[in-house]
Image 1 (tube, rainbow, N blue to C red):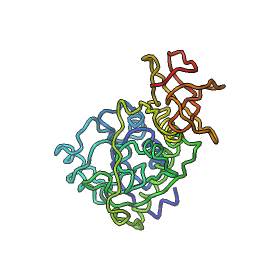
Image 2: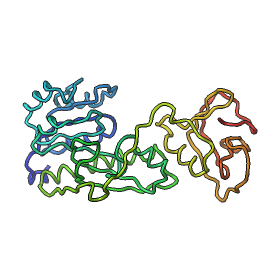
Image 3: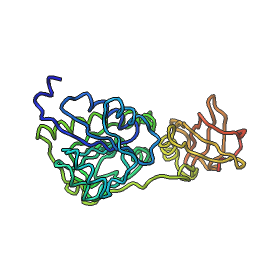
Amino acid sequence: MLDNMKYEKIKIGYFADGPWSHLAFERLILDDSIQIQFIVPRSDTNDLTLKDFSDKYGIEYIYPVNINSPEFIQMVKSYNCDLFVSMSFNQIFKVDIINVPRLGVINCHAGKLPFYRGRNILNWALINDEKEFGITVHYIDEGIDTGDILKQRCFEITDSDDYCSLLKIAYVECSNILYDTIKDIQSGVSERIVQNKIHKVGFYCGQRGFGDEIINWNQTSRELFNFIRSINKPGPMATSFINGKEVKINKSRLILNAPSYKGTVGQLISKTHEGFFVKTLDSFIEIYDMETDAKLRVGHKLK
């Protein structure tokens, strides 16, 4: 790559997992000025794509490992990395490992820092009815997603978006922004933005877990629409129950100018071509693309 002749070679250690990291790896490996010294996947990973990459390109694959152990720290020092890169990695970097590479450790985070720190960011952005979501590359420090920002880009969220569509955008754009940030670091033009200069506090999103997929029908149509689309496939899908049987709802649709009236929330009030209208706190929405063994009928109440 002729364009890379202007860049001094940079050696990186890659801490990664999942589709986010696959696309980024494929982008990085094509650049002759970027040398990936080793790959460390999540210790609980079932993802073998990175292992296939390591075999194909002759890159050391270090698995499983505690990245903060003295043994690991001593070992990775021998690789003489300039930079460590974290992409969808789940171990916390502590000060000793942070100090190993001369250029520090950077992380790509699918959230608009200093807001949306933490976990399951795309889900929370949809639940909160955001009109955009951010992707940020930042330095890792001893906090959680608190290090100085290197680069941030934002992407529109419309009512046609859901968790699936945002994931597809994030997979590609995380790869793009990470690559561009590394090139800035190589060329010496990267700038650092201290997060508390944007907002003194920001906020954190807690990890979503078992039980958080259960629908509370005592919400507005807009809130329910956002909730259902926030965890659709490949998420766990919003879940309700009829006669003790699960009803998993992958899609919902807002009804333009749906009238507001009193009624029983969660009740199936009419059959539609694709699913059912269901009563909400303020009006009703259509639910469709469902997975259930229950026989759904008008008059049934989802709980």
